Length: 97
Image (tube, rainbow, N blue to C red; front, side, top):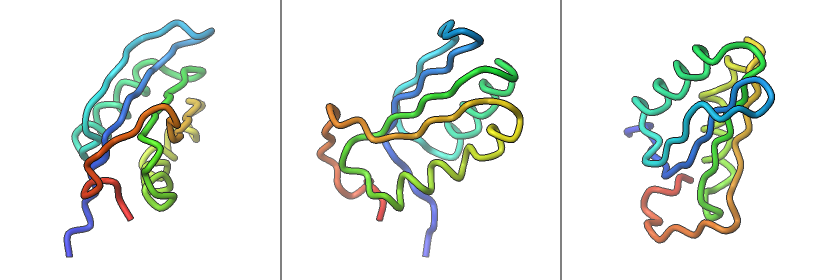
């Protein structure tokens, strides 16, 4: 069985005292995870990555996404992965289980 998951996302990366470095929106494919991870590493210690997903993403899906970015926390980069209650998304086939 294919264990690859793809989720819609919105992400903001801020450096230091909230200076916005970048914003991305799209599908959280393995490539996008790698890109966000690399961008956060370049922003450096003290930066913050905020990843938002639609409210209907399952808890297992949110946990899976959090695990993709755990190593950033160990490098002093703040990470927040949360559901956005104001964002409803209709494609239930891609919302994770």
